[in-house]
Length: 168
Image (cartoon, rainbow, N blue to C red; front, side, top):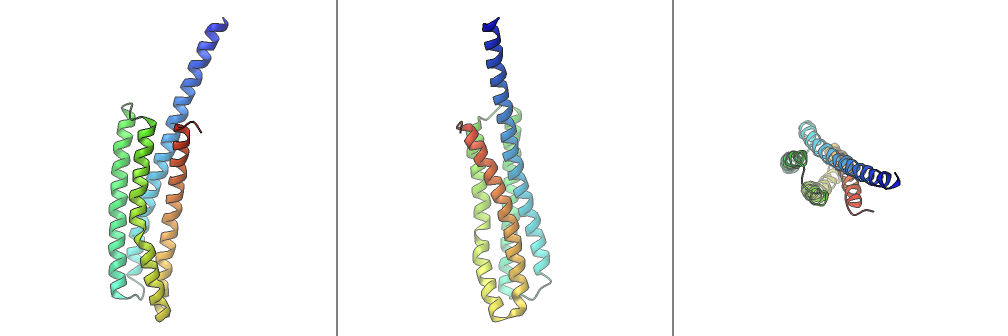
């Protein structure tokens, strides 16, 4: 019967919409998790790398401190994502809440990355005074670039989720 087909089609479309929503949430969470993993790995690598290059002692200490902050924030992001994943497994929260929380996670990552711009500026000035310190500048710039790429991928996935939640 035509009426039964319409009900079945409507139910199937709704089920696909839920499945698509879960896939979009999963993609956004995976991108956020990857970004946190990249932050943690880059911070670890950067601490090891700057130990072996000529570098102003104060700037080395600042670099190590910023890397510790990056690792801490990456851990916080991972924890928040684990909480969100557990809630999703239990049937909640709503997609809008997941978007809000993923945007909060994004803000945490951005807050941790922001001081690297000032550090890079200071390292560039140091390298201009002493070319032997240029390698430290390059290491920080390269690590920051890799972390920003991960942040961009996570932002794009969260924006896709937000657009899906708003029906765009």
